[in-house]
Length: 129
Image (cartoon, rainbow, N blue to C red; front, side):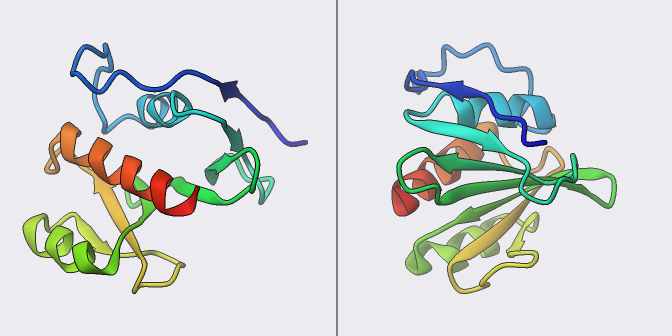
């Protein structure tokens, strides 16, 4: 009972996207699926836990879930940037249920600008690819 969506095209990073808000679960998933060679998966048979994986390696670069009334996304980050993100945005915290040295949780409550969320998603994609 695994739902999978795929998309082969790269995201338009010029700002021309028509995404409503990076606070909405569907918009975050849609953005992630615009990256090359990825797919959506629900490994725990729980619709709350969506992961976005690389097709070839099956490595996860985004864990998307609802918690405490907000959408959260766990993203891998370079340890050199980890503390920068956490210090800059109170909604970026050590990752929920993952290695806290290499992963951050981003609480999508509207306090982190969309472009910064996209930057973190792309970094996670690159680090896990």
